[in-house]
Amino acid sequence: MPFAIKTVDAFGRPYSKSQILKAVGSGWWPLVLELIQDLSKMGWDGQITQIKEKFGGLRFYVGDGTKSIHSRIYEAEDLSFSLCELCGRKGTMRSDGWMVTLCRPCNKQRQRTHKTMRWYQDQYDKLKEEFDAYKEASATSH
Image (tube, rainbow, N blue to C red; front, side, top):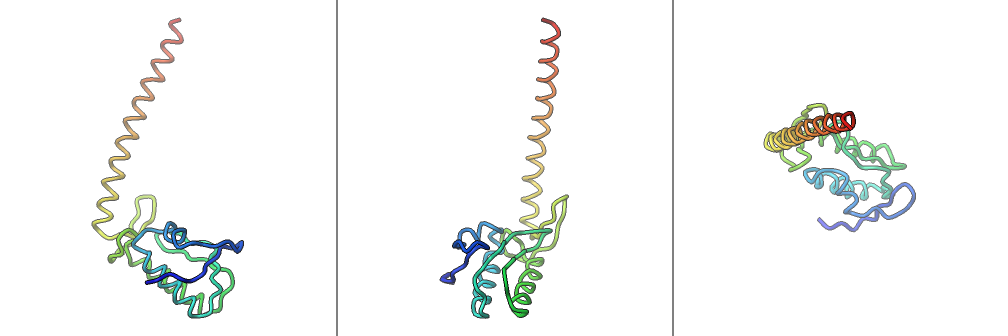
């Protein structure tokens, strides 16, 4: 789908396609680009205040807009809660302290990544504790 719609931020600066796509996971890119296409056809002025993921769902903020423009945005935001943010397949809301909408395979990968990151953090914490004890012991022995 070509992207020839002029979008701007709240200050009137150009809001590029890459900026738009960096705001959310690649699984939601088609949803966001289709939303922008639809809004443009509805007479939207192209102003994007913010795009992000929040509480597991898409948030798409614009300046002024008609009731139908805002209804179309709410529709896309609601749909995001059923699409994996990473791959676009059917997803469900998941939480381990951070709410996300993911499919089962992406969630498994995320859990493996988090488990590995926790292991490295634990190792760092242990080494730091040992090093701090060593520094303290060295300082008192001199």
